[in-house]
Image (cartoon, rainbow, N blue to C red):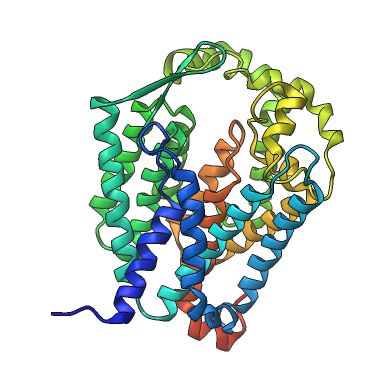
Length: 393
């Protein structure tokens, strides 16, 4: 028995991209892991050079133009802001490299016929990390303290958000290759919800409830959730709900949910205090923002908080109106293709992030991967026939 060179090449790429895109190891367990990922992502991109011709295939060309424009906007924002708040553009380059690795990898396994095998291997790797993280959460937790004297737990894969998102990716990837195993998929949803409760990630608890409701009632409400006007309305509504409606938090029933169910403070861990200083946004370059590398520094200087705790505000601070415009284009495009595929998992994931964006900075790596995955899944499933009809973006 032997492994073909092509098989070995694809499996090595799968292992590398899985770790680059999904896996984050806390420095409490492995020191210097972020530096290792940066080196690995550059290596992975180099290994993909023989497959770069796929980038300009007619099936993927127009979508990859969007990828290129997004990467250029990220790099341009970093270059224009270099030396203002930070002296490095490494974070922006890391983001660009990760996005390129993710998109090109899924195009490669689709084009070369390794879709099922590679995604199954990817799922297996993620399951192993989820299982190890869950076990270590109980037997070997690492507890650290913030500057305010509050404690927070550091899991094998990092923060509680990383922990929850990693489990969520199992929910997203599983039906791509196991379409008929609905019971197992439901158990993965339940697993993600339970872990979100146990690691006290209240936003993902809410997110998974939203995900399940949209997933379960998909056929009854799909005319609404696929409607482009409703999609933009939802984006704007959840971006501004706490900014314009803080009095909602003063309702007794909401107070009880915050305090007793979600274990949050009446000010949502200080988020409401941040919204009182939104006039500092006028200091941001409205077109390109302050860059991915500087958004945290700007937020701290402007509000005294690590970030604005709001998806759209953080997107604006990082990349300005150009970034928001590109994000909306990708958002509409992804949901358009989800409608054509009738893909309830990806569209539910998109709305999950839209909802929790009201209280978290979620429009970062994970959401872009979901959006591009929606494009690639459509091209994988309907590429040949869609090209002939001129339907591919």
